[in-house]
Amino acid sequence: MLNRIHQTALTAFFTLAGLLPAAAAQRGQPSPWEIYFQPPATPIMEFIETFHGWLLIIITLITLLVTVLLGYCMYAFNAKRNPRPSRVTHNTPLEIVWTVIPVLILVGIAIPSFRLLYDQLTIPKSDLTVKATGTAQWTWTYAYPDNGGFSYDSVMLQDNERKPDQPRLLAVDNPLVVPVNKVVRVQVTGEGIIHSWSVPSFGIKIDAVPGRLNETWLKAEHEGMYYGQCSQLCGKNHAYMPIAVRVVSEQEFANWVEQAKKKYSAVPGLAPNNVASAAEPARQ
Image (cartoon, rainbow, N blue to C red; front, side, top):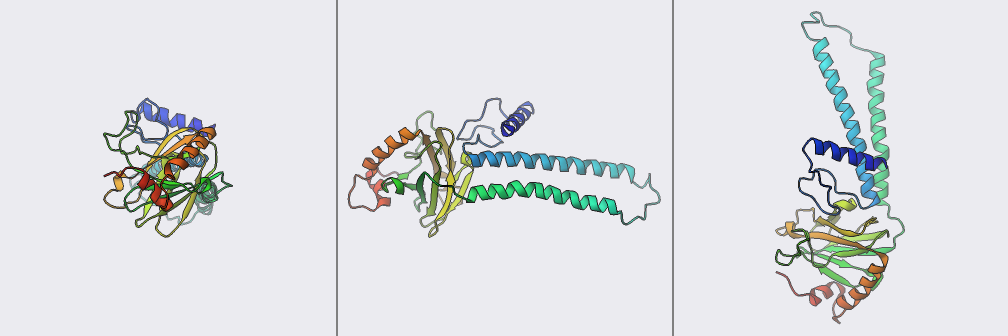
């Protein structure tokens, strides 16, 4: 509740200041002139947004305090008002105050920070495992080891392939599909090049390193399409390596899995990570 109030207050402030359009941000993708977070879709992203608001309050109060102190010092202790400067070098109560207060501030920042790190790195019992591989051809390959081991490539759509409601440079032919309100373990690795699997609405950014298997998790609370991009400078097609995740109902996901098994396992004698590229027409 406090998080929603905080988000609403900031949106109203920036709107009145002329820094934010009046229209609400679209869920799952960037909006024109957007300067705040995309609407959160997972508990982790909600925590990140709340923690950001807490830090914003702290740094604002610190900035105001320092500004007031500087103004007071310039007014009260200039050469005109104090021709004979004070020779006092120590003030024990003041030194205790300016030592204890910063410690308390750091503790107030550290506690939610450590909790956020713990929640991000500790994967709860998962309902589904998917594997995302960033390839040397600047595409993503998604595999479903819990659902028969099928895999497929996800490639950015060209301008003449997009539908009117699909965002440019973000829409793909085959998005990752996950069920809503389910804990999804995401295994991330690379093939030849270091990439980064990043989806802002999920609060996820994790490196895809060749020869290393990194893990993260998500629990999407709203159905819909969510977009991200590779956030590592991975080469000449770095800007054309989007990430698209479609969150659907549990029943719709079950139906999609059955269709995907037939579609992406139709070519015999191929390794799982080659099935998609053989089943789908090549893209230039």
